[in-house]
Length: 213
Image (cartoon, rainbow, N blue to C red):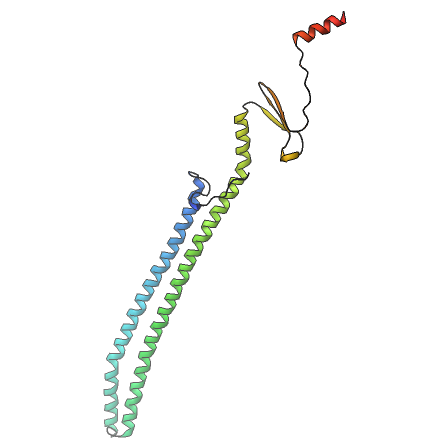
């Protein structure tokens, strides 16, 4: 009967087997990659927000100066109270509004990209963990099946120390495989048709000699 497959990936090769360490090494590598991604995204987000705040501050500082410069030009041209000056002021205001929107929109896109990247990293971590567990269980079961015939043979040798077992033919009724087994103390045959064995004794040797006279 085949051994049952392992259910714990941490001990897929059996408790104490050094090959189990590969599973934990894989998990550690996945965790390191995930944490590195998060750290990089956190740094990128902080830098983007700081830059956006700086750009908004520059726009706030420059906008009043732009209006004043426009007033000077309009005054020099005698247009201070004209519709042309008002139109120019409106254009300046729209330009700064567009620039502020561009800075804010750029920051929002960066934040969205980072959020998506972190979600993808989390999914990769979970998928990696599942794959590592499946690989460990699969390889552990394979190793168990490969080791099982050797364990069976070892158990047979332990039950029959110094003995030799020989298969005599294919399985018969009931699935019994006929074999003979010799031990230092005698022999035994299982399955098949037993052959009678005649052992000479002191008595029948005497009878044989008597008949020959």
